[in-house]
Image (cartoon, rainbow, N blue to C red; front, side, top):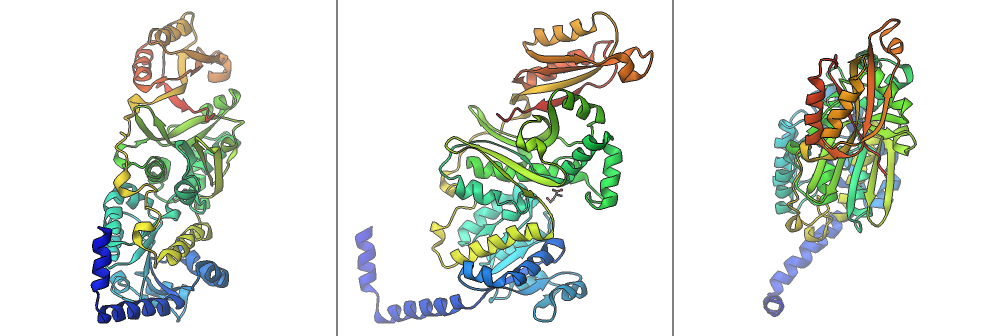
Length: 471
Ligand code: HSE
């Protein structure tokens, strides 16, 4: 094969050699000009990208090796967009005008969602543009198709801003930790829910009350469904699972549970037992496959991640060589997210002229070396549990409940029973039974919970919160 290549090279005419020299010269001349960027959607993040690029342009140029300039912006509200970028930048309402412009090398997609954003990303790739996106939903659901199209076309789709905003967790997982066999990742990757949980703990308030306050203060969106139901965190966990384990993005296999059913009582009881409740995005390699799940979790209060408060994000990564590493910072907001978007712009600018086969693969592993490890259904996940049962305060109730757990082979770690007066007021005939278990498979716990729930002395829906020691 090598000999054929040499022969072919020796056969090339003077004319061919001249053409190669011309195009190399053109690429080198162009490489001294700023790389041109088109921005699709100039909202909170887009304006942050524009501001930070302008403010730090000299340092960014010194790092990237050439200037990076946003020369076109597409936004339906052209008047507002012009107000942000001024007269030096061409503002259009039609995003396709950017994709059609041969001078533009990189398209930043900040529209969000799976609809028009997906069409535009696919069109930009087809037009040979590199793409930078913060769109976690798009990548978690359609990433396989998007990365395949980008690979075929030899362009980069960069997405540092899609997971944990300003924290460079994609870079860390894909490059910094590349020597490691990653064992698990657990992250607080949704600031809205972490803010709500922090407020619930600080002020002893229930979820509904704090959500309203968070919306009033602008921490939670008018429609907070994706955040509070765990969907946003699951998008991010899905992307991290793919990079950590070399599996395709599989949002449809993620287990997703939000924080809407959590009560102030559970946060208080967890505290008394030495735990905090956090909404964690978890992905873990086990013998039989990969766990991918988002749900409220009890975390020992002594862990650093348990002390991440307010709207901050943090991700813990456990690798076999490095041990435990922790990444902390702002997971949303204009300039923190812009920081990640611009890091991608710099990466692309540096790699723009490099041979596509020698760039860092989109999902960390070479596309032909992906793993077929199965994402496990939730009933095969092994973890430990916090259970809260509202029970009649009578003789024998505790024995029946613990009997069911013993019968199922579920080992109890700790039990506390509140005084009835403290739970239901003076003269109350009800109380709360709180049980911590050791590890067991979820399927077993489902059966045990159904049996306990059927006891006439269990008076309300049993609360089950998974517990993660993160040791
Ligand atoms: N809504 C997200 C959060 C930020 O609250 O963290 C964007 O993913």
